[in-house]
Length: 189
Image (spheres, rainbow, N blue to C red):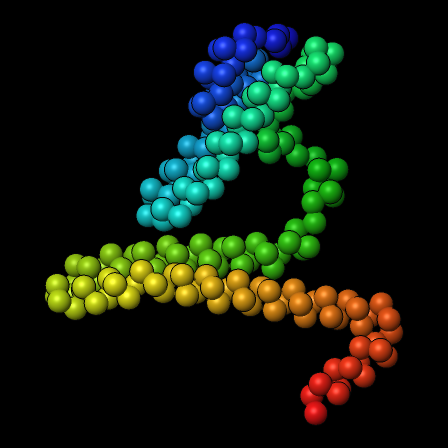
């Protein structure tokens, strides 16, 4: 059974992701947060992709404030709260019916493509570092700093255009397409 603990020790333990939850007796929540936090660091180190570390900032803040929100709960709510993993281990059919992967397929594909390109980019740069002469490497290195930013900028613009296009198509479908279709025909001429 979980018991409310000292606010001072909760504050101290909450600085370590998951430790505040574990101190209050929510072991599954705490372990989930610790695995997520340290797993992201391990992935970033293994794949040599430092930008993933920024996700850890979000996980850290979530864990910190989650521990304090648990501590601030009413006694009745606190004692009624069940300890669970962030990702359910006993995933039954009901759990999977709530998640529609097809709905987020394009988003997941985009994230995986960006992650794959980042890993590939870092690997190629590491190979070029050892195979190019120093005077050429200086130029490649200075140019390579801007390529990820340019690609990210193009990606953000593309997503924005897709969102605008999607909203326009949604409006066309709602109004039967007559009002807006006439406007788009005039704009083309």
